[in-house]
Image (cartoon, rainbow, N blue to C red):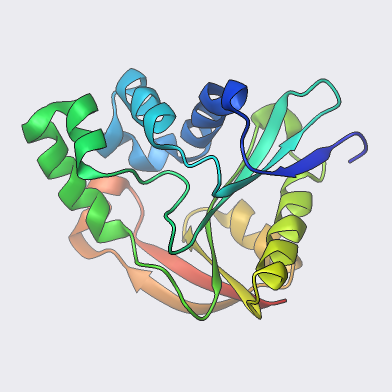
Length: 195
């Protein structure tokens, strides 16, 4: 794609756009737990880590895509218990935190961990996702990692196909068991690419 600019870090004025884009990509999966949408967006705006993301913008500065990552410093969009309580209340944050906690894993010391790739619907099939993944691989090398790891739900065939085209291999399949009734998918694939 011509006219795309990649940047490490998220400028403050794009914070709400990044939250909207993240919700656009993951709202169908996370909606039953993080919804309603207005609360989820408030939560995301509050917790997004501007230092844990690579962004793609067009020539007018419009946000086209984001690639969050997770390090020992934190992850792009997870937040803390007090953030959850501020938006959802004590009881609402308790059950949400438990369910979301079962989906997340800790930092991966062997691989650079992708924590969400999102491309705006208007920019799909224009090379934004590929450009962001190349930037993630370059960032992994800069940080001394020899591979990138990501997790993708088994029903997201478009993403699985993209990652395979970019050289990722499925290394594991993790069932989420009875949580499939909450989140609407059965399992997640772990995919790894040497960089």
